[in-house]
Length: 303
Ligand code: PRT
Ligand code: ZN
Image 1 (cartoon, helix red, strand yellow):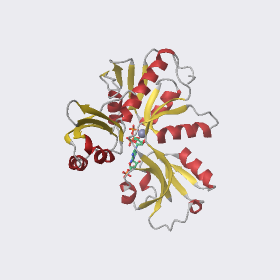
Image 2 (cartoon, rainbow, N blue to C red; image 1 turned 135 degrees about the vertical axis):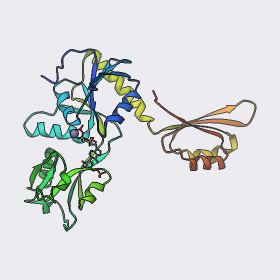
Image 3 (cartoon, helix red, strand yellow; image 1 turned 45 degrees about the vertical axis):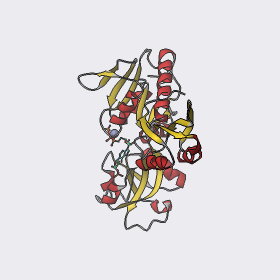
Image 4 (cartoon, rainbow, N blue to C red; image 1 turned 180 degrees about the vertical axis):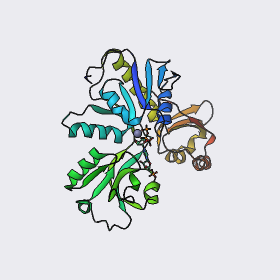
């Protein structure tokens, strides 16, 4: 099927991971955009009830092909999976078809090159002639080419970290978040090839008609939800003369709203804080003259 001409549909279909690291955060982010669904018995499809936006629950590795084939319009997937899929296409002479529509701020990790602890790492040239195990052959090959290093890429679909101990490879190239898995396998990360997080992926070219409107609506709501994801609304009162000591304690707040309380020299303040609003911070504000401090969660924002 031609990815630029998806079958005519008046509903938007988004592929997300069925189970795994990105499954729950993807669903909760989409739910925070006002989407609600009825799930099919086999738990493979969620029919959008609040908006004509359906979910297809799949393995993350299948998401790029589902978008490329026009089966799904958009997908929530790791940038690593998306870029690898595009890398494979480009390496075989096809044009890239995916675009990262939004970075979603969860599922953060990096694709790293790691070598056994005993190696005296001096740089990428040391990899010449070595075997490197990975599930990301396109991204690794691109990086090796950029370094001008000729090494053998050993493709493994899982358990990449144990490859050196099994004698299958000399080094590995795999995703790392805490680094605990590498350490447990006596491997040391020596280079970062790629920084990743979950993204909303879609075709390079957009959609027509109803789906274009739905995609635009979704992106607008995502922007609103992402913008305030870690934000809190802080409400308090203070006398006017305390303002110069209080405002410096709100460096992460968008222009705080200051309202005068009629008849008295008191102010009511409202600040949308994008940083952490900790107890310590509340205590500091109280010491600087704030009273009646209240912290409220923020679910969305339309500028
Ligand atoms: O079944 P399905 O194919 O859908 O799931 P999956 O097992 O392929 O994927 P899953 O759920 O493990 O990962 C989905 C996505 O989460 C990845 O494509 C990344 O975008 C992202 N992500 C974030 C990670 C990690 N962090 C991560 N740490 N994916 C995998 N790992 C693995 C890594 O491969 C290694 O084995 O965790 C181990 C390293 O973790 P640390 O914390 O020990 O460094
Ligand atoms: Zn997978």
